[in-house]
Amino acid sequence: MDNSRMKSDQYPRLRRMRRNATLRDMLDENRLFASEFIYPMFVTTGAGVRTPIEPMPGIDQISVDLAVEEAQLALDAGVKSVILFGLPDEKDATGSRSSSPDEAVQRAVSEIKKSSPETYVITDVCLCEYTDHGHCGIINGNDVDNDATLPLLAETAVSHAEAGADMVAPSAMMDGQVAAIRAGLNDSGHADVPVMGYSAKYASAFYGPFRIAADSAPQFGDRRTYQMAHSKGREAMREIEADLYEGADIIMVKPALAYLDVIKEASMRFDTPVAAYNVSGEYSMVAAAGQAGWLDRERAMMEVLTSIKRAGADLIITYSAIEAARIISRG
Ligand code: PBG
Image (cartoon, rainbow, N blue to C red; front, side, top):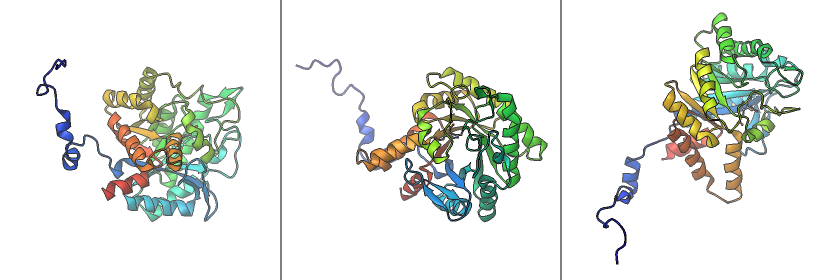
């Protein structure tokens, strides 16, 4: 006896639209483009230096000369934008090397722009790679001093713009950092350089591999007095509103994978472009499981990137950029 409530010709037949590959392809709702990827690079001093980052197979710390080659490689694959992180030789309490024109990042910016003007060069603006205590600003007592850090971030951003950076991206999570940087850029003749705010940046275990890559782990405490708690969704909207009020041109949600709801909400609520950072730990998880033979790394990588796009990201910062771009063009 047929005990279903609907007859077989009455219920929706969704499988009808999945019957062959061409049809499935025709009906794709979200497709990835290499032009929406931003490829992060860790730039160090010296020449001919390539130091593999153990938890991030395929990603290395590279000296300026190799960063130029890598940017070209990215461009050849269709990835036109890079974001640079710098590793200084020396660190101090105020991260003073961060605004030096001789540092790896500043030199990489000008060398990349020289050899490949088409590459859009973004710089990460933060002090954590440059401070000996590993925090994102200068320390007063047991905590980061918000307002004392702002001029240092502005100086750093200006030094990047002076080197030729196309865009700067402050990631320190200090209140007022976008406004301070915007003012610094405007006052130094760089009113055309946009600011991409790491607006909703969470205190996340998924930054673990990055901190090995960038040698930027805090030497005491953690970042929870400035980065957001992962339990919070609505506060992310306030962080984004603050960045927009201060003049951010692009807003960002970071990490991406565990925060797809936040990306979705931000993309529905704000008409500014939304970037999402597919962070180091997200990359490492897929790489490690792939290496163990536990999943198909390429497919998992593309699924992750597509889910970030589906959530509403206009731009995706990802260590998988070059590989994913090659997969996209291979079709
Ligand atoms: C610097 C910064 C971090 C990341 C980007 N910029 C680390 C942190 O906040 O500890 C993380 C990126 C990644 O994990 O891929 N403040």
